Length: 253
Image (cartoon, rainbow, N blue to C red; front, side, top):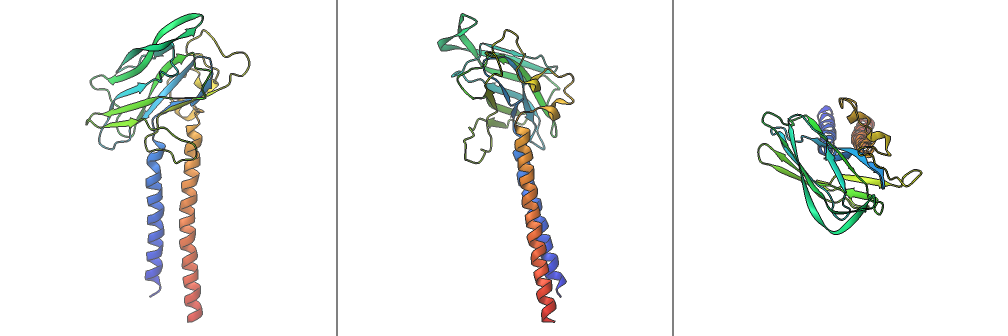
């Protein structure tokens, strides 16, 4: 007679653990900038990493908006087979100085559109590589609001701002953190050359996803450990309850 409640408690514990894992999973699949940091004042090459979160639709377009409050004078896209990149520029309210010259306009948006037969299918991700700079020296972060379009018409807007001390929003905008240049002034003339070794140009991209030191990987690790802790706690609680029930049942007999 005691086996039925015991089985029910075990089932409840396993169900709760599975629910926690299932709910935590989507939090790892954000659109991100990789690597997640670069030196102020220099040039860098980054990837906008786009995971396909749908089980039934494929990603066919990505729009990335560049902040004009900290405009970038040089933005260049890496050609990608099967994708067409369109760069839009906007006039600046106040010109910026780059290598002694006035720059009156800057790239405000990049749109990658899949050619016929190309897509990011369920279970896949794609990286869209960009060279940009010089990076501003008067801010410690740049947010790139992004829109991800699926072939069924759905649009996911990665535009929410993360705030310190608050939970991460459901659709955070990709953020590039800027750090003080190590030695020198961090300025250079080379496009796509970065002070961050993690941003070095990679070959076929097979190792890039695992090797990127973007800060998001550490966030994912922290979330994973948190989920594991919750699951272990749920199972531990269930085991404790079972032990107490058995002990109580044994003393009463």
